[in-house]
Length: 591
Image (tube, rainbow, N blue to C red; front, side, top):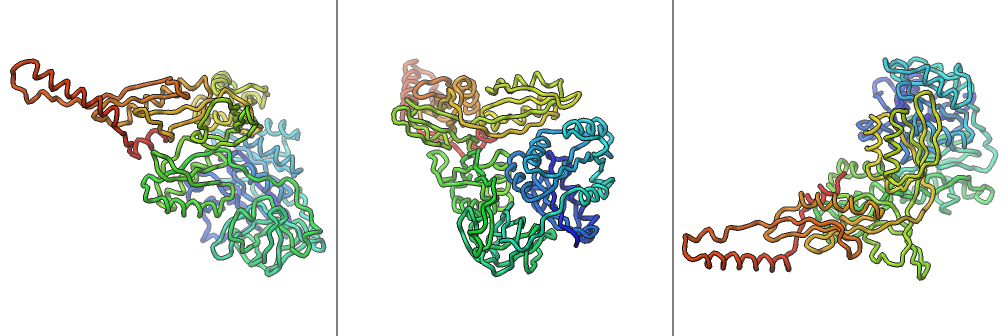
Protein backbone atom coordinates (compact mmCIF):
# COMPACT_ATOMS: atom_id res chain seq x y z
CA UNK A 1 0.00 0.00 0.00
CA UNK A 2 1.34 3.43 -1.00
CA UNK A 3 -0.15 5.61 1.73
CA UNK A 4 -2.56 5.74 4.67
CA UNK A 5 -5.38 8.31 4.52
CA UNK A 6 -7.51 8.93 7.62
CA UNK A 7 -10.77 10.86 7.27
CA UNK A 8 -14.25 11.20 8.76
CA UNK A 9 -17.70 12.36 7.66
CA UNK A 10 -19.25 15.31 9.52
CA UNK A 11 -22.78 16.57 9.03
CA UNK A 12 -26.03 17.56 10.73
CA UNK A 13 -28.42 14.79 11.85
CA UNK A 14 -30.03 12.91 8.94
CA UNK A 15 -27.89 14.45 6.19
CA UNK A 16 -26.74 11.01 4.96
CA UNK A 17 -23.44 10.19 6.73
CA UNK A 18 -24.16 6.49 7.29
CA UNK A 19 -25.63 6.00 3.79
CA UNK A 20 -22.50 7.55 2.26
CA UNK A 21 -20.36 5.21 4.38
CA UNK A 22 -22.40 2.29 2.89
CA UNK A 23 -21.45 3.37 -0.65
CA UNK A 24 -17.77 3.59 0.33
CA UNK A 25 -17.93 0.02 1.69
CA UNK A 26 -19.51 -1.17 -1.57
CA UNK A 27 -17.04 0.63 -3.87
CA UNK A 28 -14.00 -0.62 -1.91
CA UNK A 29 -15.55 -4.14 -1.56
CA UNK A 30 -14.79 -4.07 2.19
CA UNK A 31 -17.99 -5.94 3.06
CA UNK A 32 -19.23 -8.98 1.15
CA UNK A 33 -22.47 -8.45 -0.77
CA UNK A 34 -24.19 -11.42 0.91
CA UNK A 35 -23.86 -9.90 4.41
CA UNK A 36 -24.33 -6.23 3.46
CA UNK A 37 -27.30 -4.26 4.82
CA UNK A 38 -28.24 -0.57 4.80
CA UNK A 39 -26.56 1.65 7.44
CA UNK A 40 -24.07 -1.17 7.88
CA UNK A 41 -21.91 0.72 10.38
CA UNK A 42 -24.90 1.44 12.66
CA UNK A 43 -24.78 -1.78 14.69
CA UNK A 44 -27.45 -1.04 17.34
CA UNK A 45 -31.17 -1.69 16.65
CA UNK A 46 -31.94 1.67 18.25
CA UNK A 47 -29.66 3.43 15.72
CA UNK A 48 -31.44 1.74 12.82
CA UNK A 49 -34.94 2.53 14.11
CA UNK A 50 -34.25 6.18 14.91
CA UNK A 51 -32.10 6.66 11.81
CA UNK A 52 -29.29 8.28 13.84
CA UNK A 53 -25.71 7.34 14.68
CA UNK A 54 -25.28 7.03 18.45
CA UNK A 55 -21.83 5.40 18.63
CA UNK A 56 -19.03 6.39 16.24
CA UNK A 57 -17.74 3.51 14.12
CA UNK A 58 -14.35 3.24 12.36
CA UNK A 59 -13.67 1.07 9.30
CA UNK A 60 -10.52 0.26 7.28
CA UNK A 61 -10.83 0.12 3.48
CA UNK A 62 -8.41 -0.43 0.59
CA UNK A 63 -8.77 1.63 -2.58
CA UNK A 64 -6.41 2.22 -5.54
CA UNK A 65 -3.32 1.18 -3.62
CA UNK A 66 -4.18 3.23 -0.51
CA UNK A 67 -5.40 2.35 2.98
CA UNK A 68 -8.45 4.47 3.83
CA UNK A 69 -9.52 4.72 7.49
CA UNK A 70 -13.02 6.19 7.84
CA UNK A 71 -14.68 7.23 11.12
CA UNK A 72 -18.49 7.57 10.90
CA UNK A 73 -19.36 10.11 13.63
CA UNK A 74 -22.63 10.93 15.48
CA UNK A 75 -24.37 14.13 14.35
CA UNK A 76 -26.20 15.08 17.55
CA UNK A 77 -25.01 17.89 19.85
CA UNK A 78 -25.01 15.56 22.90
CA UNK A 79 -22.07 13.63 21.40
CA UNK A 80 -19.99 16.64 20.36
CA UNK A 81 -17.00 15.56 22.45
CA UNK A 82 -16.80 12.19 20.65
CA UNK A 83 -16.85 14.07 17.34
CA UNK A 84 -14.03 16.39 18.47
CA UNK A 85 -11.79 13.42 19.45
CA UNK A 86 -12.57 11.66 16.15
CA UNK A 87 -11.48 14.80 14.29
CA UNK A 88 -8.20 14.77 16.25
CA UNK A 89 -7.57 11.24 14.92
CA UNK A 90 -7.81 12.12 11.20
CA UNK A 91 -6.32 14.49 8.59
CA UNK A 92 -9.40 15.15 6.47
CA UNK A 93 -13.18 15.54 6.79
CA UNK A 94 -16.03 15.25 4.30
CA UNK A 95 -18.47 18.08 5.08
CA UNK A 96 -21.82 16.67 3.95
CA UNK A 97 -24.81 18.99 3.44
CA UNK A 98 -28.35 17.89 2.58
CA UNK A 99 -29.53 19.61 -0.63
CA UNK A 100 -33.15 19.65 0.61
CA UNK A 101 -32.53 21.40 3.97
CA UNK A 102 -29.20 23.21 3.42
CA UNK A 103 -26.69 24.21 6.08
CA UNK A 104 -27.92 23.40 9.60
CA UNK A 105 -26.72 24.14 13.15
CA UNK A 106 -24.63 20.98 13.60
CA UNK A 107 -23.10 21.49 10.12
CA UNK A 108 -21.61 24.74 11.42
CA UNK A 109 -20.66 23.35 14.84
CA UNK A 110 -18.80 20.36 13.37
CA UNK A 111 -17.20 22.50 10.65
CA UNK A 112 -15.70 24.83 13.27
CA UNK A 113 -14.38 21.80 15.21
CA UNK A 114 -12.74 20.52 12.00
CA UNK A 115 -11.19 23.92 11.28
CA UNK A 116 -9.79 24.03 14.85
CA UNK A 117 -8.09 20.68 14.17
CA UNK A 118 -6.66 22.11 10.88
CA UNK A 119 -8.27 19.36 8.79
CA UNK A 120 -8.59 19.34 5.00
CA UNK A 121 -12.31 19.97 4.33
CA UNK A 122 -13.88 18.17 1.35
CA UNK A 123 -17.37 19.70 0.84
CA UNK A 124 -20.17 17.70 -0.82
CA UNK A 125 -23.88 18.28 -1.45
CA UNK A 126 -25.96 15.12 -0.83
CA UNK A 127 -29.48 14.02 -1.86
CA UNK A 128 -29.35 15.74 -5.27
CA UNK A 129 -31.68 13.00 -6.61
CA UNK A 130 -34.66 14.20 -4.53
CA UNK A 131 -37.34 16.33 -6.26
CA UNK A 132 -37.21 18.89 -3.40
CA UNK A 133 -33.42 19.33 -3.69
CA UNK A 134 -32.21 22.97 -3.85
CA UNK A 135 -28.77 21.98 -5.13
CA UNK A 136 -27.54 25.27 -6.64
CA UNK A 137 -28.88 27.36 -3.75
CA UNK A 138 -27.20 25.06 -1.18
CA UNK A 139 -23.98 24.99 -3.21
CA UNK A 140 -23.82 28.79 -3.30
CA UNK A 141 -24.40 29.08 0.48
CA UNK A 142 -21.73 26.44 1.23
CA UNK A 143 -19.21 28.10 -1.11
CA UNK A 144 -19.75 31.46 0.65
CA UNK A 145 -19.39 29.81 4.08
CA UNK A 146 -16.09 28.11 3.16
CA UNK A 147 -14.81 30.97 0.99
CA UNK A 148 -14.21 28.71 -2.02
CA UNK A 149 -15.33 28.44 -5.64
CA UNK A 150 -18.63 26.59 -6.24
CA UNK A 151 -16.89 24.23 -8.69
CA UNK A 152 -14.88 22.74 -5.79
CA UNK A 153 -18.07 21.36 -4.19
CA UNK A 154 -19.11 17.91 -5.39
CA UNK A 155 -22.73 16.95 -6.01
CA UNK A 156 -23.57 13.40 -4.90
CA UNK A 157 -26.40 11.05 -4.05
CA UNK A 158 -25.34 8.66 -1.31
CA UNK A 159 -28.53 6.66 -1.90
CA UNK A 160 -28.00 5.76 -5.57
CA UNK A 161 -24.21 6.24 -5.67
CA UNK A 162 -24.07 9.24 -8.04
CA UNK A 163 -20.70 11.04 -7.71
CA UNK A 164 -19.54 8.91 -4.75
CA UNK A 165 -16.56 7.37 -6.53
CA UNK A 166 -15.49 10.85 -7.65
CA UNK A 167 -15.65 11.95 -3.99
CA UNK A 168 -13.48 8.98 -2.95
CA UNK A 169 -10.93 9.91 -5.64
CA UNK A 170 -10.87 13.48 -4.34
CA UNK A 171 -10.14 12.23 -0.80
CA UNK A 172 -7.20 10.17 -2.09
CA UNK A 173 -5.89 13.14 -4.11
CA UNK A 174 -6.34 16.00 -1.61
CA UNK A 175 -6.20 14.66 1.97
CA UNK A 176 -2.65 14.63 3.31
CA UNK A 177 -1.42 11.07 3.99
CA UNK A 178 -0.60 10.13 7.58
CA UNK A 179 3.02 10.18 8.75
CA UNK A 180 4.42 6.65 9.02
CA UNK A 181 7.51 7.00 11.22
CA UNK A 182 7.86 3.73 13.15
CA UNK A 183 11.24 4.64 14.71
CA UNK A 184 9.93 7.19 17.24
CA UNK A 185 8.60 6.20 20.72
CA UNK A 186 5.07 4.79 20.46
CA UNK A 187 2.23 7.30 20.93
CA UNK A 188 -1.51 6.88 20.21
CA UNK A 189 -4.73 8.84 20.79
CA UNK A 190 -7.73 7.00 22.26
CA UNK A 191 -10.81 8.29 20.40
CA UNK A 192 -13.30 5.74 21.75
CA UNK A 193 -13.46 2.72 24.04
CA UNK A 194 -15.84 -0.13 24.86
CA UNK A 195 -15.93 -3.06 27.26
CA UNK A 196 -15.66 -6.69 26.13
CA UNK A 197 -16.27 -9.46 28.68
CA UNK A 198 -13.39 -11.56 27.25
CA UNK A 199 -10.78 -8.93 26.34
CA UNK A 200 -11.55 -6.20 28.89
CA UNK A 201 -11.63 -2.58 27.73
CA UNK A 202 -10.96 -2.22 24.00
CA UNK A 203 -9.38 1.13 23.12
CA UNK A 204 -10.01 2.57 19.64
CA UNK A 205 -6.73 4.31 18.78
CA UNK A 206 -5.04 6.44 16.14
CA UNK A 207 -1.31 5.67 16.14
CA UNK A 208 0.61 8.93 15.77
CA UNK A 209 4.14 7.51 15.87
CA UNK A 210 6.01 4.25 16.55
CA UNK A 211 4.56 0.74 16.58
CA UNK A 212 3.18 -1.68 19.18
CA UNK A 213 2.48 -5.44 19.28
CA UNK A 214 0.41 -7.81 21.42
CA UNK A 215 1.91 -8.87 24.78
CA UNK A 216 3.82 -5.56 25.11
CA UNK A 217 3.33 -3.42 28.23
CA UNK A 218 1.32 -0.20 27.74
CA UNK A 219 0.88 2.98 29.82
CA UNK A 220 -1.97 5.54 29.90
CA UNK A 221 -0.56 9.06 30.42
CA UNK A 222 -3.62 10.77 31.98
CA UNK A 223 -5.05 7.82 33.95
CA UNK A 224 -1.49 6.76 35.00
CA UNK A 225 -2.39 3.08 34.54
CA UNK A 226 -0.27 0.34 33.01
CA UNK A 227 -1.05 -3.15 31.75
CA UNK A 228 -0.33 -5.74 29.09
CA UNK A 229 -1.83 -5.75 25.59
CA UNK A 230 -4.00 -8.81 24.92
CA UNK A 231 -4.69 -8.14 21.24
CA UNK A 232 -4.21 -5.53 18.48
CA UNK A 233 -6.02 -5.26 15.17
CA UNK A 234 -8.04 -3.31 12.59
CA UNK A 235 -11.73 -2.54 11.99
CA UNK A 236 -12.93 -4.42 8.88
CA UNK A 237 -15.47 -3.19 10.19
CA UNK A 238 -15.60 -5.99 12.79
CA UNK A 239 -12.54 -6.54 14.99
CA UNK A 240 -9.83 -8.24 12.92
CA UNK A 241 -6.70 -9.24 14.95
CA UNK A 242 -3.25 -8.32 13.54
CA UNK A 243 0.26 -8.77 14.95
CA UNK A 244 0.97 -5.05 15.41
CA UNK A 245 -0.22 -1.48 14.84
CA UNK A 246 2.10 0.99 13.09
CA UNK A 247 2.36 4.78 12.76
CA UNK A 248 -0.49 6.41 10.86
CA UNK A 249 -2.91 3.53 11.33
CA UNK A 250 -6.29 3.42 13.07
CA UNK A 251 -7.04 0.24 14.98
CA UNK A 252 -7.89 -1.23 18.35
CA UNK A 253 -5.93 -2.37 21.40
CA UNK A 254 -7.46 -4.86 23.87
CA UNK A 255 -6.12 -3.70 27.24
CA UNK A 256 -7.57 -6.28 29.66
CA UNK A 257 -8.70 -3.41 31.96
CA UNK A 258 -11.96 -4.04 33.81
CA UNK A 259 -13.35 -0.50 33.87
CA UNK A 260 -13.98 1.72 30.83
CA UNK A 261 -13.45 4.80 33.06
CA UNK A 262 -9.74 3.88 33.32
CA UNK A 263 -9.38 4.11 29.51
CA UNK A 264 -11.14 7.37 28.69
CA UNK A 265 -11.61 9.03 25.31
CA UNK A 266 -8.84 11.59 24.68
CA UNK A 267 -6.16 9.85 26.79
CA UNK A 268 -2.67 9.17 25.35
CA UNK A 269 -1.55 5.53 25.15
CA UNK A 270 2.16 4.69 24.99
CA UNK A 271 4.54 1.83 25.84
CA UNK A 272 5.51 1.47 29.48
CA UNK A 273 9.18 1.40 28.40
CA UNK A 274 9.03 4.85 26.77
CA UNK A 275 6.42 6.63 28.92
CA UNK A 276 8.94 9.31 30.03
CA UNK A 277 9.83 10.15 26.42
CA UNK A 278 6.22 10.86 25.36
CA UNK A 279 4.18 13.97 26.24
CA UNK A 280 0.37 13.59 26.61
CA UNK A 281 -1.65 14.96 23.68
CA UNK A 282 -3.36 18.34 24.09
CA UNK A 283 -7.11 18.82 24.20
CA UNK A 284 -8.00 16.07 26.68
CA UNK A 285 -11.30 16.80 28.47
CA UNK A 286 -13.37 14.82 30.94
CA UNK A 287 -16.85 14.56 29.40
CA UNK A 288 -19.10 15.89 32.17
CA UNK A 289 -22.81 15.12 32.58
CA UNK A 290 -25.01 18.20 32.16
CA UNK A 291 -28.54 16.74 32.54
CA UNK A 292 -29.58 14.89 35.70
CA UNK A 293 -32.59 12.72 36.46
CA UNK A 294 -33.54 10.11 39.04
CA UNK A 295 -34.51 6.62 37.85
CA UNK A 296 -36.79 4.43 39.97
CA UNK A 297 -38.03 0.94 39.01
CA UNK A 298 -41.83 0.84 38.63
CA UNK A 299 -41.68 -2.41 40.62
CA UNK A 300 -39.58 -1.92 43.78
CA UNK A 301 -38.47 -5.55 43.54
CA UNK A 302 -36.51 -4.66 40.36
CA UNK A 303 -34.00 -2.43 42.19
CA UNK A 304 -31.12 -4.94 42.04
CA UNK A 305 -31.91 -5.72 38.39
CA UNK A 306 -31.81 -1.98 37.65
CA UNK A 307 -28.44 -1.68 39.41
CA UNK A 308 -26.99 -4.54 37.31
CA UNK A 309 -28.38 -3.02 34.11
CA UNK A 310 -26.95 0.44 34.91
CA UNK A 311 -23.52 -1.08 35.62
CA UNK A 312 -23.56 -2.94 32.29
CA UNK A 313 -24.52 0.21 30.39
CA UNK A 314 -21.84 2.24 32.17
CA UNK A 315 -19.21 -0.38 31.27
CA UNK A 316 -19.55 0.88 27.67
CA UNK A 317 -20.31 4.54 28.40
CA UNK A 318 -17.85 6.35 30.66
CA UNK A 319 -19.75 9.66 30.31
CA UNK A 320 -22.77 8.26 32.17
CA UNK A 321 -22.91 8.79 35.95
CA UNK A 322 -25.18 7.18 38.56
CA UNK A 323 -25.38 6.83 42.35
CA UNK A 324 -28.02 5.29 44.66
CA UNK A 325 -30.66 7.50 46.29
CA UNK A 326 -33.92 7.01 48.17
CA UNK A 327 -37.23 8.83 47.81
CA UNK A 328 -40.04 8.70 50.37
CA UNK A 329 -42.59 8.38 47.59
CA UNK A 330 -40.80 6.14 45.07
CA UNK A 331 -38.46 4.05 47.22
CA UNK A 332 -34.93 3.13 46.14
CA UNK A 333 -33.50 4.32 42.84
CA UNK A 334 -30.52 6.05 41.22
CA UNK A 335 -29.57 9.64 40.52
CA UNK A 336 -28.12 9.66 37.00
CA UNK A 337 -26.16 12.15 34.89
CA UNK A 338 -26.18 12.40 31.06
CA UNK A 339 -24.59 14.44 28.27
CA UNK A 340 -28.01 15.68 27.15
CA UNK A 341 -31.67 14.77 26.74
CA UNK A 342 -31.07 12.45 23.77
CA UNK A 343 -28.41 10.59 25.78
CA UNK A 344 -30.95 10.21 28.63
CA UNK A 345 -33.70 8.99 26.24
CA UNK A 346 -31.34 6.39 24.74
CA UNK A 347 -30.41 5.01 28.19
CA UNK A 348 -34.12 4.82 29.18
CA UNK A 349 -34.94 2.98 25.95
CA UNK A 350 -32.01 0.56 26.32
CA UNK A 351 -33.08 -0.27 29.90
CA UNK A 352 -36.53 -1.14 28.59
CA UNK A 353 -35.41 -3.11 25.53
CA UNK A 354 -32.20 -4.84 26.51
CA UNK A 355 -32.99 -5.49 30.19
CA UNK A 356 -36.82 -5.46 30.22
CA UNK A 357 -36.93 -2.94 33.11
CA UNK A 358 -39.67 -0.30 33.30
CA UNK A 359 -38.61 2.88 35.11
CA UNK A 360 -40.02 6.17 36.36
CA UNK A 361 -37.68 9.07 35.47
CA UNK A 362 -37.91 12.28 37.50
CA UNK A 363 -38.13 15.72 35.85
CA UNK A 364 -34.71 16.35 34.15
CA UNK A 365 -32.66 19.06 35.85
CA UNK A 366 -29.18 20.59 35.71
CA UNK A 367 -26.38 20.98 38.26
CA UNK A 368 -26.63 24.15 40.39
CA UNK A 369 -23.79 25.87 42.24
CA UNK A 370 -24.94 26.98 45.70
CA UNK A 371 -22.86 29.37 47.85
CA UNK A 372 -23.55 29.97 51.54
CA UNK A 373 -23.13 33.76 51.83
CA UNK A 374 -22.24 33.57 55.54
CA UNK A 375 -19.49 30.93 55.26
CA UNK A 376 -18.54 31.17 51.53
CA UNK A 377 -18.97 27.39 51.34
CA UNK A 378 -19.66 26.25 47.74
CA UNK A 379 -21.65 23.13 46.97
CA UNK A 380 -22.83 21.59 43.68
CA UNK A 381 -26.34 20.11 43.88
CA UNK A 382 -27.82 17.75 41.30
CA UNK A 383 -31.35 17.37 42.65
CA UNK A 384 -33.90 19.85 44.12
CA UNK A 385 -34.23 17.59 47.19
CA UNK A 386 -30.61 18.52 48.09
CA UNK A 387 -31.66 22.17 48.57
CA UNK A 388 -33.14 22.01 52.06
CA UNK A 389 -32.65 25.59 53.32
CA UNK A 390 -33.15 28.51 50.90
CA UNK A 391 -32.20 31.47 53.09
CA UNK A 392 -28.80 33.19 52.91
CA UNK A 393 -27.83 31.32 49.74
CA UNK A 394 -26.59 32.40 46.32
CA UNK A 395 -27.80 29.96 43.65
CA UNK A 396 -26.05 29.88 40.26
CA UNK A 397 -27.16 27.89 37.22
CA UNK A 398 -25.31 26.85 34.04
CA UNK A 399 -25.81 29.03 30.96
CA UNK A 400 -25.34 28.05 27.33
CA UNK A 401 -24.65 29.84 24.06
CA UNK A 402 -27.29 28.73 21.56
CA UNK A 403 -27.30 29.25 17.79
CA UNK A 404 -30.62 28.78 15.99
CA UNK A 405 -30.73 28.61 12.19
CA UNK A 406 -34.19 29.48 10.88
CA UNK A 407 -36.01 30.68 7.74
CA UNK A 408 -36.69 34.43 8.04
CA UNK A 409 -40.48 34.04 8.27
CA UNK A 410 -40.17 32.24 11.65
CA UNK A 411 -37.68 34.70 13.13
CA UNK A 412 -40.21 36.67 15.24
CA UNK A 413 -41.85 33.59 16.77
CA UNK A 414 -38.48 32.02 17.63
CA UNK A 415 -37.16 35.26 19.20
CA UNK A 416 -40.34 35.40 21.31
CA UNK A 417 -39.79 31.78 22.44
CA UNK A 418 -36.14 32.46 23.35
CA UNK A 419 -37.09 35.57 25.36
CA UNK A 420 -39.87 33.68 27.17
CA UNK A 421 -37.16 31.18 28.16
CA UNK A 422 -35.05 34.02 29.68
CA UNK A 423 -32.67 34.14 26.70
CA UNK A 424 -30.42 37.17 26.06
CA UNK A 425 -29.78 38.11 22.43
CA UNK A 426 -26.12 38.27 21.37
CA UNK A 427 -26.61 38.96 17.67
CA UNK A 428 -27.93 37.80 14.31
CA UNK A 429 -26.21 36.96 11.04
CA UNK A 430 -27.40 36.13 7.53
CA UNK A 431 -26.67 32.58 6.38
CA UNK A 432 -28.14 32.83 2.89
CA UNK A 433 -30.98 34.57 1.02
CA UNK A 434 -33.74 32.92 3.05
CA UNK A 435 -32.20 31.96 6.43
CA UNK A 436 -30.59 33.67 9.39
CA UNK A 437 -28.64 32.61 12.49
CA UNK A 438 -29.92 33.82 15.88
CA UNK A 439 -27.30 33.79 18.65
CA UNK A 440 -28.53 33.87 22.26
CA UNK A 441 -27.29 33.12 25.75
CA UNK A 442 -29.85 31.15 27.75
CA UNK A 443 -30.10 29.13 31.00
CA UNK A 444 -29.36 25.47 30.23
CA UNK A 445 -32.40 24.37 32.28
CA UNK A 446 -34.66 26.15 29.78
CA UNK A 447 -33.17 24.22 26.82
CA UNK A 448 -33.68 20.78 28.36
CA UNK A 449 -37.33 21.43 29.20
CA UNK A 450 -39.26 20.73 25.95
CA UNK A 451 -37.45 23.60 24.17
CA UNK A 452 -36.47 21.57 21.09
CA UNK A 453 -40.03 20.32 20.54
CA UNK A 454 -41.43 23.86 20.77
CA UNK A 455 -38.74 25.18 18.40
CA UNK A 456 -39.59 22.53 15.80
CA UNK A 457 -43.32 23.15 16.28
CA UNK A 458 -43.29 26.93 15.74
CA UNK A 459 -40.87 26.70 12.80
CA UNK A 460 -42.80 23.87 11.06
CA UNK A 461 -39.70 21.70 11.53
CA UNK A 462 -37.34 24.00 9.57
CA UNK A 463 -35.28 25.47 12.47
CA UNK A 464 -32.20 23.73 13.87
CA UNK A 465 -30.11 24.49 16.96
CA UNK A 466 -26.73 23.86 18.53
CA UNK A 467 -25.57 24.87 22.01
CA UNK A 468 -22.41 24.96 24.11
CA UNK A 469 -22.27 25.43 27.88
CA UNK A 470 -20.36 28.60 28.82
CA UNK A 471 -20.48 29.35 32.57
CA UNK A 472 -22.47 29.54 35.84
CA UNK A 473 -24.53 32.69 36.50
CA UNK A 474 -26.57 33.83 39.48
CA UNK A 475 -30.31 33.84 38.94
CA UNK A 476 -33.49 34.57 40.89
CA UNK A 477 -33.97 30.86 41.54
CA UNK A 478 -36.20 29.19 44.09
CA UNK A 479 -37.19 25.64 45.03
CA UNK A 480 -40.79 24.82 44.16
CA UNK A 481 -42.32 22.11 46.37
CA UNK A 482 -45.61 20.24 45.98
CA UNK A 483 -47.68 19.06 48.96
CA UNK A 484 -50.45 16.46 49.09
CA UNK A 485 -52.52 16.52 52.28
CA UNK A 486 -49.82 18.89 53.63
CA UNK A 487 -47.05 16.33 53.08
CA UNK A 488 -44.19 17.25 50.68
CA UNK A 489 -43.70 14.86 47.74
CA UNK A 490 -39.99 15.32 46.93
CA UNK A 491 -40.21 13.53 43.56
CA UNK A 492 -42.15 16.52 42.13
CA UNK A 493 -39.87 19.27 43.54
CA UNK A 494 -37.90 21.43 41.12
CA UNK A 495 -35.64 24.49 41.07
CA UNK A 496 -37.14 27.21 38.90
CA UNK A 497 -36.94 30.92 38.09
CA UNK A 498 -39.12 32.90 40.51
CA UNK A 499 -41.09 34.62 37.72
CA UNK A 500 -42.15 31.22 36.30
CA UNK A 501 -42.97 29.65 39.68
CA UNK A 502 -46.69 30.57 39.84
CA UNK A 503 -47.43 29.40 36.28
CA UNK A 504 -45.56 26.09 36.72
CA UNK A 505 -46.99 25.54 40.22
CA UNK A 506 -50.55 26.04 38.95
CA UNK A 507 -49.96 23.70 35.99
CA UNK A 508 -48.62 20.81 38.11
CA UNK A 509 -51.28 21.28 40.81
CA UNK A 510 -54.02 21.03 38.17
CA UNK A 511 -52.39 17.92 36.66
CA UNK A 512 -52.20 16.32 40.12
CA UNK A 513 -55.87 17.06 40.71
CA UNK A 514 -56.71 15.18 37.50
CA UNK A 515 -54.46 12.20 38.23
CA UNK A 516 -54.95 11.56 41.98
CA UNK A 517 -57.76 9.09 42.75
CA UNK A 518 -60.52 10.40 45.02
CA UNK A 519 -60.36 9.44 48.72
CA UNK A 520 -62.87 9.38 51.59
CA UNK A 521 -61.67 12.83 52.66
CA UNK A 522 -60.83 16.12 50.92
CA UNK A 523 -57.21 16.24 49.67
CA UNK A 524 -55.45 19.60 49.54
CA UNK A 525 -52.96 19.88 46.65
CA UNK A 526 -50.54 22.79 47.06
CA UNK A 527 -47.50 24.36 45.39
CA UNK A 528 -45.21 26.17 47.83
CA UNK A 529 -42.06 28.29 47.91
CA UNK A 530 -40.57 27.84 51.36
CA UNK A 531 -43.61 28.15 53.64
CA UNK A 532 -45.65 30.28 51.22
CA UNK A 533 -48.45 28.59 49.26
CA UNK A 534 -48.66 29.96 45.68
CA UNK A 535 -51.22 27.60 44.12
CA UNK A 536 -53.86 25.29 45.54
CA UNK A 537 -56.58 22.88 44.47
CA UNK A 538 -58.85 20.57 46.50
CA UNK A 539 -59.77 17.06 45.40
CA UNK A 540 -63.29 16.50 46.75
CA UNK A 541 -64.08 13.42 48.85
CA UNK A 542 -66.40 10.53 48.12
CA UNK A 543 -69.82 11.33 49.55
CA UNK A 544 -71.66 8.36 50.97
CA UNK A 545 -75.41 8.79 51.44
CA UNK A 546 -75.58 7.97 55.18
CA UNK A 547 -79.29 8.92 55.33
CA UNK A 548 -80.39 6.39 52.71
CA UNK A 549 -81.60 3.91 55.32
CA UNK A 550 -83.96 6.46 56.91
CA UNK A 551 -87.62 6.14 55.91
CA UNK A 552 -89.06 9.24 57.53
CA UNK A 553 -89.26 10.51 61.07
CA UNK A 554 -87.84 13.61 62.71
CA UNK A 555 -85.32 15.79 60.74
CA UNK A 556 -82.96 15.71 63.77
CA UNK A 557 -82.16 12.02 63.04
CA UNK A 558 -80.99 12.99 59.54
CA UNK A 559 -78.91 15.90 60.90
CA UNK A 560 -77.30 13.68 63.51
CA UNK A 561 -76.07 11.19 60.89
CA UNK A 562 -74.76 13.98 58.61
CA UNK A 563 -72.94 15.62 61.54
CA UNK A 564 -71.35 12.28 62.48
CA UNK A 565 -70.14 11.84 58.88
CA UNK A 566 -68.74 15.39 58.85
CA UNK A 567 -66.71 14.77 62.04
CA UNK A 568 -65.37 11.50 60.60
CA UNK A 569 -64.19 13.26 57.43
CA UNK A 570 -62.45 15.96 59.51
CA UNK A 571 -60.66 13.30 61.54
CA UNK A 572 -59.59 11.43 58.38
CA UNK A 573 -58.36 14.67 56.86
CA UNK A 574 -56.22 15.25 59.94
CA UNK A 575 -54.69 11.77 60.08
CA UNK A 576 -55.28 10.31 56.60
CA UNK A 577 -52.30 9.33 54.45
CA UNK A 578 -52.20 9.20 50.65
CA UNK A 579 -50.29 6.41 48.94
CA UNK A 580 -49.86 7.38 45.31
CA UNK A 581 -49.62 4.62 42.74
CA UNK A 582 -46.60 4.38 40.42
CA UNK A 583 -48.97 5.18 37.53
CA UNK A 584 -49.69 8.65 38.97
CA UNK A 585 -45.96 9.43 39.19
CA UNK A 586 -45.41 8.08 35.68
CA UNK A 587 -48.20 10.23 34.20
CA UNK A 588 -47.04 13.42 35.92
CA UNK A 589 -43.31 12.99 35.31
CA UNK A 590 -43.42 11.80 31.71
CA UNK A 591 -42.79 14.42 28.99
